Length: 57
Length: 242
Image 1 (cartoon, helix red, strand yellow):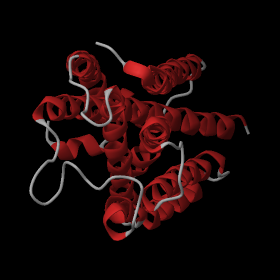
Image 2: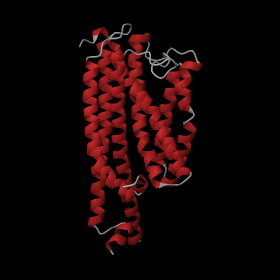
Image 3: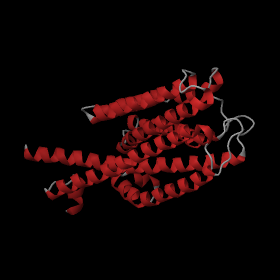
Image 4: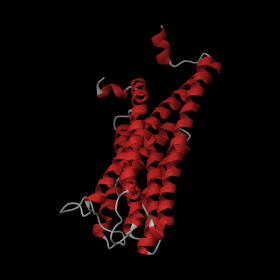
């Protein structure tokens, strides 16, 4: 595969796409672990949701 | 499990946890297959190798519009039925749509320089796409900066519905106005104008990007449901200690 005289434009396009998608995926993964951690902390302190209390009784 | 059961956030979370690993794996496989086909796709007889930019530019353009469509349907669910999961779906789609629109604008600009001789021109297609990006930023600002999440969600839903007017403008801009951007090559009267050796990789990449959208959307919806649980638990904690 040869990219010809405009290789810079092609490589830059794919590089930008990879960076944006990777940033989006990283944000989603980090946000998920952060929310799970906060929920765990709250439950450790005895805070439960109303629906959780109903299902436990 | 019936589809209607997914309207329950807890059941939706269980569904998302089960489906997400499979969806992510399918996305990776689709991209691997698509990129392999892109590598061996022939150069265009006029544009040369720069046609390879099309394999990311066109799918992200389609998805940026489809994502706004998802947000518009979700906005109806928020405003008419006031369903919390509809609001979650709308809020989760906005950053993904903004990212796809950004990629579309940047890759289009990088494709335009060697093809048209300019990075940017204020023609109807490019300008209406830029307007879509600004609308995404507006929706995100309403979701992320409103003090009262309920009011922010309703305002974002209204903007999503109003902004839907821009989607047919983008689609038909190359037909109604004299633009530097080429007219539709795939969905047009008389069938596709693209050779099959380039069309197949394009469709595979479009499928891969669509899977990526659904994977990210499902994952972002899951995060948003958890964030709302955190918020309600903190409010209960604050109420109990007051």
